[in-house]
Length: 354
Ligand SMILES: NC(=O)c1ccc[n+]([C@@H]2O[C@H](COP(=O)([O-])OP(=O)(O)OC[C@H]3O[C@@H](n4cnc5c(N)ncnc54)[C@H](O)[C@@H]3O)[C@@H](O)[C@H]2O)c1
Image 1 (tube, protein in one colour):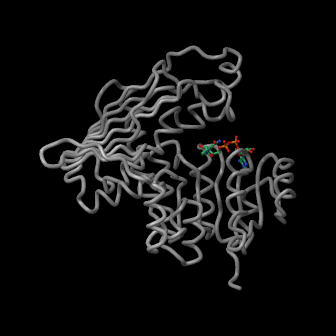
Image 2 (cartoon, rainbow, N blue to C red):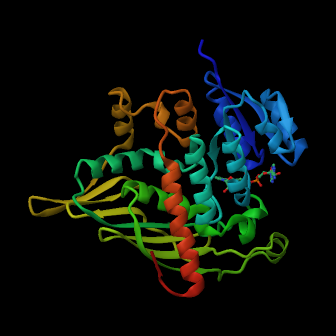
Image 3 (tube, rainbow, N blue to C red):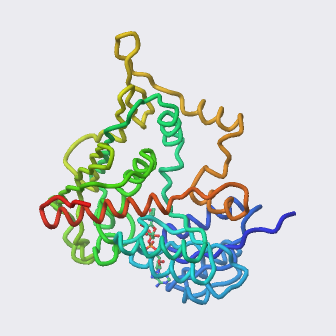
């Protein structure tokens, strides 16, 4: 049997535990050799529940373990850049949680270090790996949509501000740690899939507004030091006269969002439920598609390898040499450029010109 890939997970909080579960589900291919967390007690609990031999409180000790090839960074956003850079420089491939970093500048340091060291850098952008995104990419590449000139990504949580509305830990709502609120946390998933579908175009201008308007639990607000936005709205012009409209809310007084929409000269797509809007014989038609059928056919004719099912699986399979690494780092970097420009535009009340 071929040797297993050896990985180490840094951060055993909510998402670190979920990534441990992901590697365990690939147990024939991967072995988790070590975990590290400042909260050593929790790291020890995770290690003993999952048969992981080494536990560290200092992540730098984990980076010294020679047999570890891949390091998984599941830490608050302010630590993504320094820990990823240390890991890359220690000769490890890195899988890092989203957002890539707090700012474009930090993300660029990560990207450049991966290039300099020649190591793999994968960012957790699960939306790029969905069957809807795969199907949309296929439609764009086979010219079903014609020239794509307008994309819209609109996502509302009615009341889903991290921690203050009930879920997860306070570092998400402190700008100095997280880099921002709804945009940094959730819009990055949606912006990145649009950037991916558009072929990573260059940005011309970005205009945005951010808001924090709706009341929240006072005790949780105070305890968490909440200082981020619950709503971000943006307008991006890309080179080639392509426009993207963004709305992302953690909390809003409205019933429904519009989801992800792609408008082309021959056809438009809504990703969920996956529907094509076009014209046939002079009449407009709305055509839903069966994603299960697409998935089964893609699998059976052998093009959609399991190695493209998720960023974590792609990270593992790429290191095993079975599939190429999807270049999420370039997409995450462009996404960071957009969200950083959105924050700048919102703060200065003016357009950011590139
Ligand atoms: N919670 C989710 O549902 C979710 C989903 C997708 C992505 N993410 C991303 O995952 C990352 C982590 O989020 P989380 O929800 O797991 O947070 P969390 O607070 O649950 O876990 C973070 C862990 O990092 C540890 N830590 C902090 N500083 C450390 C250091 N210097 N060295 C070692 N360990 C340290 C903490 O002790 C904690 O266990 C964030 O970037 C977030 O955006 C979270």
